[in-house]
Length: 184
Figure 1 (tube, rainbow, N blue to C red):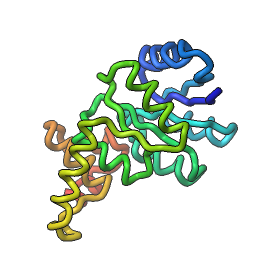
Figure 2 (figure 1 turned 135 degrees about the vertical axis):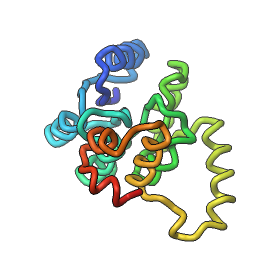
Figure 3 (figure 1 turned 30 degrees about the vertical axis):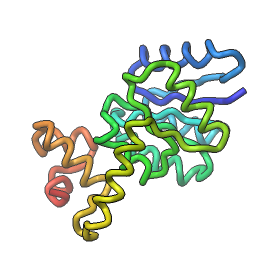
Figure 4 (figure 1 turned 180 degrees about the vertical axis):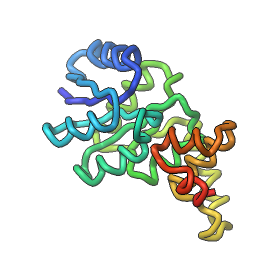
């Protein structure tokens, strides 16, 4: 039986995921964390077989939490589960150390499939993500190092594109406006 930690700021999402996973015969025992701070604390206190992590968390982005989780336990598999489409964050999540990326609009069976693949030591990508990765491989070949954005730069870019001001972005990412301005 897998020991899974679900990290999401929405109680209804955590409860729904827990119900799905505990409904599968002998798949998992599930615990919950409402933010990155709690997830990191629980990871320090006990061992997990898998973490399901949302990107959009209060106080600290899920990608930042992922990086910290990788420092605490480099072998701990982390599945990113987000409302953001794969083309927005999946590549960044894999670069940060995730072993899978799943959109929250996915069917419950897809979540179970992802967990089974990851628990067997594999990585999980959906069919559409596999196509996106293949397309990106061809595009990346022609790019210079200056054209490839860091995780933080990418987060800022996405938030700017969504219409947020620098102050709102700073508040969302828990950074100063000066820091945000430096990434633009």
